Length: 160
Length: 196
Image (cartoon, each protein chain N blue to C red):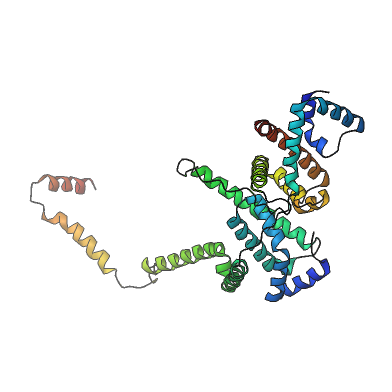
């Protein structure tokens, strides 16, 4: 039996969890070793702190504050009855879908989509288009005689 | 554990029907238990009261869904332990983030206020305060689960089975936790004992 054994088994010693014959040897060692005796005495005092009576009383404001928190939680619960305030994250996909639908609707109107089909068999000339072609072709009438462009056009007509 | 389970169930049913009188009598019956547990874990009266209020608020909100499989005291212990540990973890995170800004020279108040009936001599009081400070310091250095198991076992005097119910773990793991906690406490306490 040595001091190291005592140090390693202090808790078991205090809780009487050592065999009777070991206990006898420990007692014999303690009688002869002042250091271990002191250590065990100190450890006993610390270990006794577990059994010290301890009471903590709540402050006078404990119940009023608790009641206030209860009432606050109840009023909070009422406001949470609405589905979206209870599950705000579920609002996001619905909002995104609505935004997309509005965008399509707006795009349809602004882009005049689909383009109205030209009525079949109508004899009405597309005046804007004809006017455009006429103007474009008319550009070639004003070239001065003997110019490079006129020679080129002549060449094209002769070949054609 | 305290309280008559049948009466408690009746009171809890009334609480579920939003009866504030029944709620108050349950609070008065268990406030000491809840507050003590929170204080033992948090080591601060203000925080302990705040968490204890949260525990009772949870009881009020969940009264309808309480199935009565365990005693109310077991359930309250469980909620008190969980909420106290949550607060400690939150504090640890904040302390970690504010490591370079927060002053660590905060005064260390008395660890546990002891109400001893036997001896009120100033020197004995001082010695006890010192011993309780050492024990608290050693206890605080234990891993979370070991610390809670030791608090419930040694301070609250609960059996291993009751602790297993509170921590929702097996009996053998509670036994192992307490065994390891005692070993660790001994290791932590020895150097301080040598200094005394």
